[in-house]
Length: 606
Image (cartoon, rainbow, N blue to C red; front, side, top):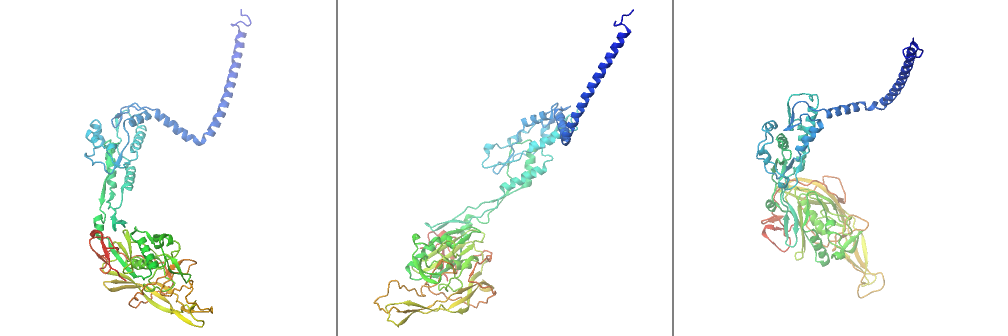
């Protein structure tokens, strides 16, 4: 008989069953709670990661892909990557091949023909002949162009293909680090190579002037280069297909000859225009002309460069050797350092126009000049760089030079331009001016003279009538007028009539020291009205009036002009009346030829 509580009794078995049921319920409840918490955490995690789900999937896929090993036999070039992960394969390839492909202008020419990557691999690796054609960095002179790393780019494309859907392919596979699929990238490299080396041919031209030897120096001519982009792209492809990733490729380019060598430049450069004006016997004024000419002489103007008379000569001061000479300041005669230099700027102005160039700044004088026809003058201010100036731009295709000389014996100023002619043969350009009207003179100016008796008047100088002029540009071909166009108008004031008298009531034997008189013989005044700038007075000899009738073709009127007409184009030999070319393109305006090869004698010409 069973005892209550005995393990074999009915009651014991029932109690044990109930205990088991209670434990199962507790376990199920605990599991349910854990499940609920887990679901809650998972839900929050899903909410946080909602925006990056695809990224995580991609990362997981990448990790799987990187961890996946290839099945079957697989080669990249001659490297066996069978059984490797993607990362291991990448490391194996980059450990063997180093990208250092370059292009050099002076690299030796290729000595082998390109072969395909497939045939090279079939022969058991890189061809020995191809390898020997590679140039080392030590053999290169000058800067080389480093081609962008196309090896890595090609490798990544291959690895993406190998470790894609075909990763489980057990068949033997071979891939090559060639140029396949890189046409766009290689074309971009060819463009960059062309940008580095393409250059235009550069002709020889005047670069400097040696005043001690009176000889011009010329720049060296340079050949141009035009890179063959198609050939360069083919060379890069061939290097990759032949596994020459560290080769130095020779530049594929065609050369272009310069239009003019140094020897040819010395023959073609000549005096393209020259102009001469006559000075006076005033020693101080002539000293100023000499200094201004020395400042201009040998000035080189590059293509497109603007010449400034004021900036070239600098301020005309006593410290720089200029002497006081007659000048006008606000319409009054004064003595100023540098008086007279307007004759040099005017002479240059006429030379520029004759050469077929157009001034960019020109000012008429206040009073009509006497050393050139009115309307053909160019006043400047020596009271600072910002005053009235005479400017022009070198619009020719080559550099040019200014030659200037003051001849103390002949008392003349000659200015020439040396360059490549811009006018066609037989073409000449000149200014022709005509007086349009006369205007009132400056009235009467009385000068105190105590040597005169009271009530006695003495005429010192006759007054002059003011005038307005029109200037045209006349172009001729073999002496026949081909164009006659308005250039500018110029207006000049009249000089007052000067009369001496004595109003003091005291008669002296000699004139007072401060009774300095400058008559209109020390003439031509400063240009346009400014607050303080002064301009040189010129006592020069009157020039002949321009021949021929000039009809104004424009109603435009002003006292100054900033002429901006484009220069006449074309190239020709200069007129014999302007210059006599001996054996070379230089110019000598001083004491005679120094060397036959570098001398051009400019004929004085008004």
